[in-house]
Amino acid sequence: MFKRHTFAFAMTIDKALARLDAAVEAGTGFGLTVDANGHIKISRKQGPALLNGFFPVFVGRFHAVDQHTELRGGFRFNLFAIALFAGFIAASMISLFGVLSSPDDIAGLPPEWKWQRVRFELQFTGFASLAALFAWLAGKPVRERVISMIRHASTDNGHGSSKNQ
Image (cartoon, rainbow, N blue to C red; front, side, top):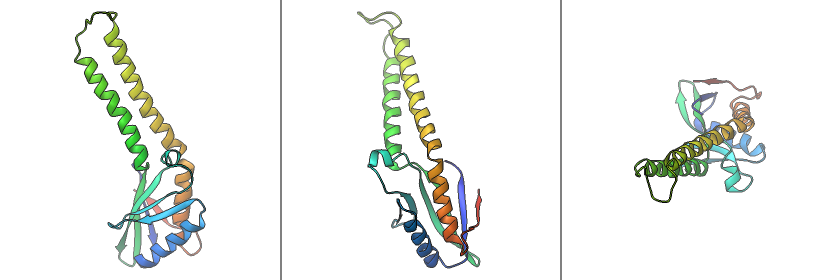
């Protein structure tokens, strides 16, 4: 998730973008978008948004360097998936702080009620975090396929050059 990738293109930014767009379109099921800030996003375009949200998205930007162009970027979850996990964890943390600020003894509840709720909220937060980790690990084939498409676009023979930072 925090690994940065750099891909070298021996051409201008415009030509590199055109070649990358052609390579992504050739890889069925993927799409390339460029936003107003020049950020390039490569993601899967198949399936419902909820399921597609857990596939990694490559977000990068072209930079002109000496005699070539570099695409620098990394992978992240779809913003929908990030919002979903953040919502789960935030709701659990709010509930946890509410339980911790409650009095220990409440009429009608067993004496250990508070610590049972604390344990539940911590387990829920841990489960949500592990689910995000496993979703990220399951996205490795998609990340490798996107890297392969970018490498193919960066050279004429398809053996692209890239380095990780």
